[in-house]
Length: 395
Image (cartoon, rainbow, N blue to C red; front, side, top):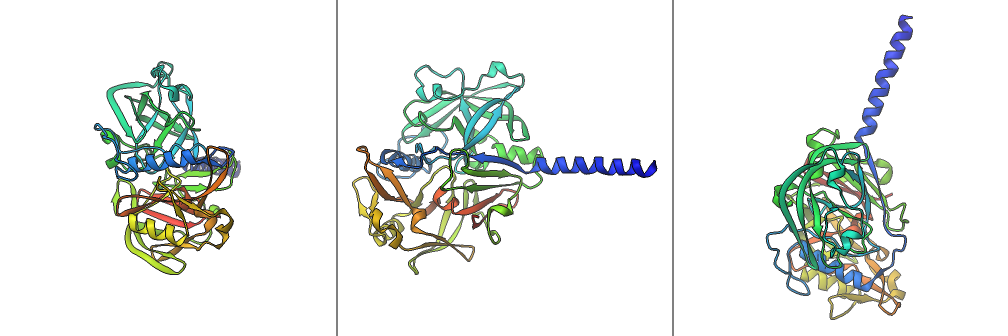
């Protein structure tokens, strides 16, 4: 009998331990639209939004921010990765963009303006239907290159998988003017950057997860599939890394600033020739592009044989893609190469014809933005606890 009781206790403890361990690694399936062919107009909107996000000048001057936060989303219908969360008690479901290039959480509000078409195209948060809703009262506003977003702050319970974050401050958007969010496959943003870039200094959701000890390791990681379907776009893992999703070992480098996920970029090589070194780079899951400083932008696109357009695009010959060179980013002393099929983006003109565009876009700044083109090729671990970022070839 004593042995049976001991065995039962051991099994009970093991079950508790197993449940606890399983709750510490939360997998969020990433989705993107079934059609992966973006329109040329969506590519242009993406570049415009990217410039506004980092408050730099590109094709045109960025409009005044009116005190809003420096964040935005790319309006590219077929190039966005999103996943589910719920807010409130009982939980109200939302499909969200998980964006390491911003730090605020917001969703559309049930009280949004009738003129906000984007708001009415998505599920809206109803504060009166949640028993854990706590009003905040402060107004928030986020400026975009193609419009703005505004509303009020609130607190409520936010659930992602089995993780339940209590008393999270987030934005309830009541005004979403313009076309920026009308046709997106997500309702709002989960910003995964650090608090210094958050509007009003609001604690980001992942910082709350760490503070509330919902994860053992203050790490999240992205695995983005570049040729998946709407149901299989990849995975976001909270609490660690999944070694089955990458080959070899992760190369970690320390962050230079804990605002954006910014790190040192040793050098860049094109066809074996080093074109730059000692740059800074930012890993941004909120854009699919590779944003380059002016000098590198011109050099790379020229070496690719690109034809410049009046909109700062570079057209590439679709029939010559396989002959284009490998472009290598050297990070932490390791080589991370992109093949032509990684950095050439297919798009359609208004007349339905197909074209090929360079994913290297202009950033009038002295740093790089590595978006989903890079992160889709290299599994990326965002280690907030140790202020570092790691890369390894995606499986």
